[in-house]
Length: 135
Image 1 (cartoon, rainbow, N blue to C red):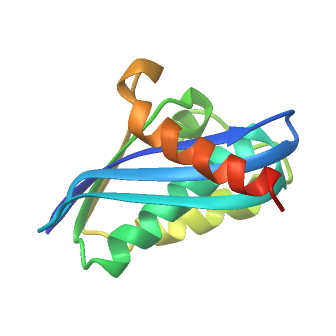
Image 2 (image 1 turned 90 degrees about the vertical axis):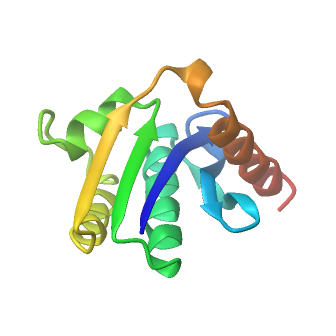
């Protein structure tokens, strides 16, 4: 089964209250799947990676064998595609976990998408950030 996910992360303050979101437009028999997570205090880049991990776990739990990810974070996309190095120590464990999870799929792609094409994932990431602010 092939799934497509749009992902995003949001941090208010960088670092600050943060959230992650993953939107699967045709994720199930009942329509789109929306996932979000409150992260507490995190940087924007950490939140972006947590959005990716949320989508990877969500796809694995649903039995996907192929996964196409779309993200508006050029840094994240370029790092996962091997064009940029991961220098920040706080991102390295997230990066390596994402690589390991991505390898479980027969096919995995991650592509950059403009922010205006990522509104659903952005909404979910902000819902997670809202929940982090209420903690």
